[in-house]
Length: 420
Image (cartoon, rainbow, N blue to C red; front, side, top):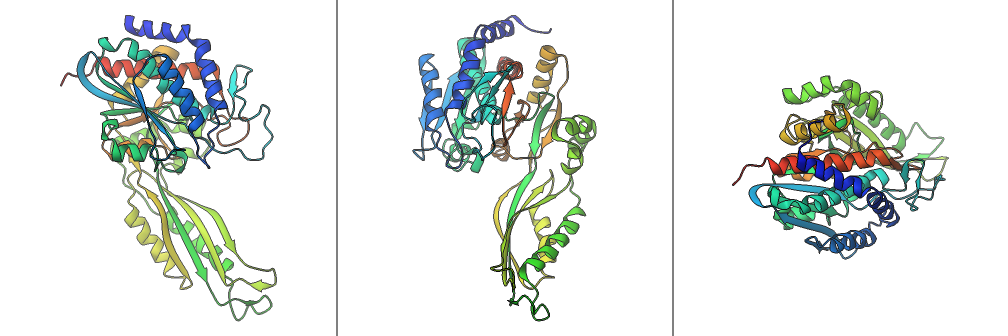
């Protein structure tokens, strides 16, 4: 293994703290933070207690009292670059599924840690927190600055979390961002598709169900609209940079393995999902109104204006239909061969003997907000086992591997940083 003395020391810290790390993640899961409603008071208190006990510099920033954020920052012994660690504290809510272990139990069993948020993303956020803890111990040997951001509100686009911090506290911007969202130890995510949410409203005359010759139903019109949108969006091609295109070719096999069959194709295409459909009053009435909310994901290089022009062309063929934008986040990406991506790959090769490939994400994350500011941002996180469903969990050894990779990669970035 190509491990320096300082890195061996860092790995020794992690091994000595193995039980503390496992217990912290278990307690982190027990600190309920479903979003909605998004209250992260419990995990904020837990993290604050840890950082205070270890005498680390941090502050709590609470633009919304129920949605606090933790920001810690340390100056290294020599001038250099600024690395930001980012993770979120809020998690998906729990539905009515029957879990093997209670969703807020943080149960440690069968070599795993169970509970809502185990992989999304309290494992990754724990890696960020302890990277901050361990590098603080050897800060005099490093160059530049390290900032920890443990944020609220990621599941609802971060108006009180990462987005708030970047808009109001520019000191969290940095020169590079490292994040531990779930994905796979076999991949490094350098970009993610854009998100376009639209509402389509259909209004027509309506009538008694027997009088279909007088009025077509709003729901039937909506169904024809969906078909036409699907056909039109499927034909649109984007314009990705050559180095990004190469990652789709080289990473096809691993993408299919970790994201499911068909992932390599859909990552490069526009996807459309009708998330909600509301219409009709009674079975024997032709509905006069229908409303549907549609989630459209845009691949890297795709422009919203062009897509909307095509959508509006379809809508123009349906005089009963109007369209309204609800939300939009452009696609975002960093150089797939960027410095942090190469650092991560080298450390995983040393630790595990395999080479994680750079791929683009299907879903969204807070990393896009740093990319919008021109900051390279990369994700290396655990497998998405039970993500958003029952029995969410993370393997203990995989969790510890994520911690090790984040610690060593942050060390590499700050130890080789150029003085300023």
